[in-house]
Length: 493
Image (cartoon, rainbow, N blue to C red; front, top):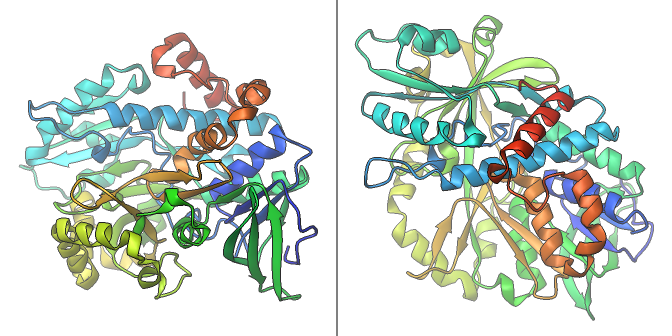
């Protein structure tokens, strides 16, 4: 749909048609059915930027396989704190999605989520690190059932492509978690927004927001329509959520709120190899993550992934990192320079000073050849042939730059920034991003609508039964929750 807004006054305006806005719109439609909620998307369809399945890894990020979530400690062990937190967050997402399936908002879970084992795979000197990681995680209730093996035959059964053609003397090890998932966040976004529209949320595509202006205790949202009617528009609202991916930084800056001072962004682009040989695709049924190269950003951890594209299996490898000044895949080359302001110049310069290895890594990635890309793939799949793969461009990821002890710090993750009065909030950053959308939006509701919490508690608990508790601290609730969500979403238990 693309037209001028039906009203110039809304209870909430959500900017960006990705999974974050879709999640918040769906929640608000259930929490406050009488509210007028507007979602504005600049493209002619929703979920087409970072939420699109070919623009992200689609991993249901639950720290089952991502080695960067469990850093090594000086004593030879690993720190599992971040892994536990991310897994807890993903369990909230599973519960919310299961609720939407039960309510008929998401009619067929197979259209957006499927069981795919999650594996970690290492070679040589990394084997002891993986063993320590396995021993630490497997004792935790959230990671029960994780398997470990150094046996080449067993690993070959789990993922045949990993071992086919591999040198006989190479030491390898792997872990496997059958509870892993593949998520098509683009499909999920479309379905949630379609359901929200049926419940009264107004969705307008082809509408680009240009400015946010204070209007008493609320805001005026100013933009342009690229639809058939064209022209500019203005809407008034007491609450704005800026969930437009990389585009959120510019609008946060336009809002002028003091809480947004000092924030900058560092965009990282990426590419994938997608397999075109169906026989190869059918031989692999797992998401296999390895160790990142020295200096590589966390979202560049290499992985060989089974994906589900509208029910059909697909196989991809990557990502290969790169650099573009664009903040969105369909953004502008001026996005980065136009984001530099006096208040964030020092943090951005400090990040440039302290991340020379990252800049060097990105430079090497940009100029790598087809043979070099294939060499990286062959670390996972030794028998890979170039004719079986095609190169795709992934989505843009804008990493958060903010003030830090040495002037500035580059943060790999998400950052929810909101005004002191809760009237506007913006989400910055990237991975694990989409997988934790439910936790992030629940946090937004607490921080921006504190006076509504008691009124909403019963409904929030209906959406997310473990709301307000930690599953890792209640094994009975954890067991019941995993069983219920696995059943409703038709996932491996």
